[in-house]
Image 1 (spheres, rainbow, N blue to C red):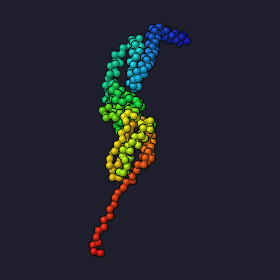
Image 2: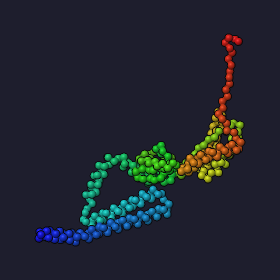
Image 3: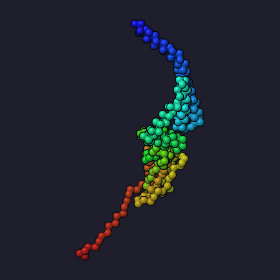
Image 4: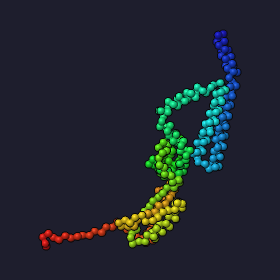
Length: 279
């Protein structure tokens, strides 16, 4: 019994000794970490407000804010480790060796992060733009370090690895997408009247962009008709909805104007050959 009491007393003394020796270091480290979190949150909020006031790109704002948070928290952790007398030199060396070894196994993901950083800094497109790249098209919903997310009119999310974007030809039409259309009129109809009717119809739709202006003119002289082509720009998020409505409106307006839309026609000539019997 006396031995158990002695062991407990020794344990209590050891705990008290370590508490006295390292208690202030632990408390100081916790205070430093808490202060680091508070300063990081305050700095990120201030940077976000500044970027919002300057109307900067959301992707660039988020990237800089995240970097600022990481730097501040990193310094806080280093200072907290210093309270215990821990040097970070071995950790830096081990991290460098691990990074060198992992770079060979993670070339694909790392190249995505490098490409994402290039996109964020060079800003060939921003959130809300309509782009076509790597055989896909859609509105830019989010730009991450590893990938870029597009959303089409059907609400389908398209995730593209950033390495498949950098170095490719990118078509960026901002918030609009070009909509082509064509309608055939007979050769006896007035093409200038048809062009004017189509122009008036397009002006009745507020979704059609005024700049750049719609383009209307004769596309070709086909076998049975004169084809009038028209091109205009509408918001990508309602592309097909507007195209279908405008095509219907153009068809009705052409009919109301008395312009004939011909059916495909062919002239067939029958040639009779003389009878071989002479009859």
